Image (cartoon, rainbow, N blue to C red; front, side, top):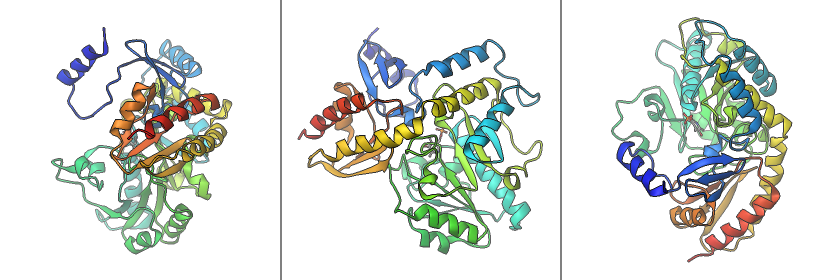
Length: 397
Ligand SMILES: *Cc1c(COP(=O)(O)O)cnc(C)c1O
């Protein structure tokens, strides 16, 4: 079966809510994926950083298969022997007292919104239904109706109203704007330490630190959405660590399962997550033993293989190689660790297509940005190989 057959099936039967590159992937191993025609590609997107550990990591796969042979789903009506150990290991690693497990990133964001509102009413004393959450222009926090209510991207919102109230949008990277937007009803400020979908937008140095201080001063929760930046992607375990910030609430997803299964979580301490009572919130699959066993193995791989340091060192190397490319198309190169955005002066799609033809997969984001975020298990030799091709492609007219 050739690629065209599968592309036609997608186009016929799938809603057209994506515009994928036409490469039909059949299997993957580490940084490499293989299409149905047997052609091999270096994956420089990592499923939006969900496969930091590399595709089909054998240790995670073994844990998944072993758990599948035991039990996969109990629901939270009963307890299981994987969720507790998973959350303990996650909390120890991340430095929080408690966690609430969910599945997708958007569900974890929704959970954080609910946690912040509950804290606002029960602890801060905000009047009923008056809670406000401040978010940033250019944010991406997911696709639910509440989350798209506070996006600044028209395409994510149009024709999906009416929208959920209670959100205030301020410019990204502007701490003074945050302080000015805070009112007595503000319960939280939710921010991505680097805006991934926004185009690998890095805020000015010191911004996160200052924003966290402003939140502390005004008794506002600082919520970091580290779904894409967390778990080693930027060369630290969490991107907020670059500025010594420990968020009050941390949202994780994506690489929390190494790409095997949707696993997300909200982490915080007892004063916030301790407010949830039975019946307040839940999910049939959240905290299930299969996801938990996968999450445990996924975290173990990050530790065992020292993926955080790898990302820091190899990311600096990769960025250095890209910075030496003298292409008239390049406007700016930014990012931290193996989370690199190359902003072009022209639409990026044709460069992504040319890279695909040379065996490198990346995707344009926000029309003019090429994001390079390979699995953190990539080697220096593989980066050199990729950088040579990227250079040739960016030198095209
Ligand atoms: C991907 C992403 C989400 C949404 O995660 P889903 O699993 O797609 O729901 C939320 N926030 C950020 C920063 C993301 O990158």
